[in-house]
View 1 (cartoon, rainbow, N blue to C red):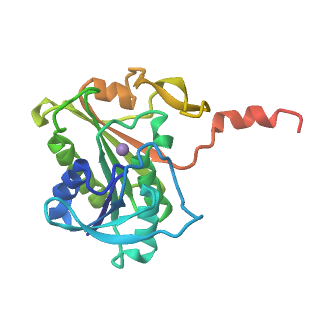
View 2: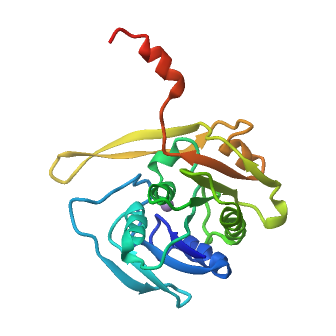
View 3: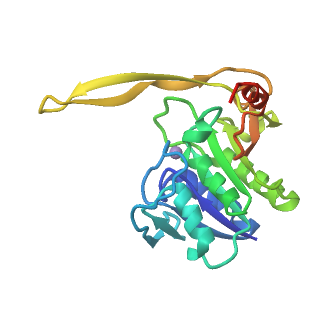
Length: 254
Ligand code: MN
């Protein structure tokens, strides 16, 4: 088995190393990730400039590939032939914050797994529901073991065609995790606020600021599962059609 490991936090992020190390015994692992942080960059295809790929060394001494492109570019480059050997599974993460609800369209972690599906390869995104404020380095060990288990299951059982998995792991120790829950996307509550400022020449500029988003705690959803202490596994597909809306729209006079 050949597993491609990527992320959206940059190739030297600790979550990526934890993920790569956790799955090394499942097969050959190739790490190919962006050279900087692309969090909340969404699904990107870079077409207005060339992309570079180069070799780097991770902090455990293992080799990796990096690119100046986005997470989804990394996956596309790998699947299109920059990585010569056939890839059986793409793992993206471990993102230091959860990716739930509407986050999936912003998330570089999740959209890297979406790119895998577009390339015809199963994709799994793994994110950690870490505490909002933490000063010490995050402990990725539980999430890494969870990722290994989900990867093993996906390699053994195969994912349904066109389906990626969005996995979110509570920030708990192994024996505190209640289990695995297959969930649907919940509702994210963003608390974005406009922070308008002036540059030294008096011209306005803006930050999208505000508090870290929260979510609606509802049973059966990603956020509900996390809050109840379960690993949340949400199968996602790229078909975003609002099927219930189709009939109503057809009734309009076109
Ligand atoms: Mn990130």
